[in-house]
Image (cartoon, rainbow, N blue to C red; front, side):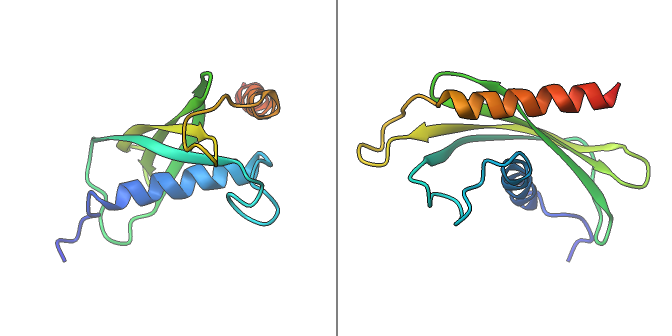
Length: 128
């Protein structure tokens, strides 16, 4: 209605990017999210609005896992305009690995850590 991208939409962009990242690195279970008994809850989202995006404007969304702790990991996001690569928004989020029975945080396994680490190392090597 106002011709600009509503601020609430950016959370959806971040969520889509997070899920695509997990798919791209091979951590999405074959039968879909949570089908393997591993549960992750989004516990924090943060957005900094830097510029307006307008209706029908093409945007690029960049996402990466920036750290992994004992039972949580963090994402960083950048949204830029495709036309000139100017920054529209940036943000971050925290995801916690949860025990399905107790619903309490539980350590992230070493396989998850290795897959993410290997992927991020390869991305950085290809950027050079």
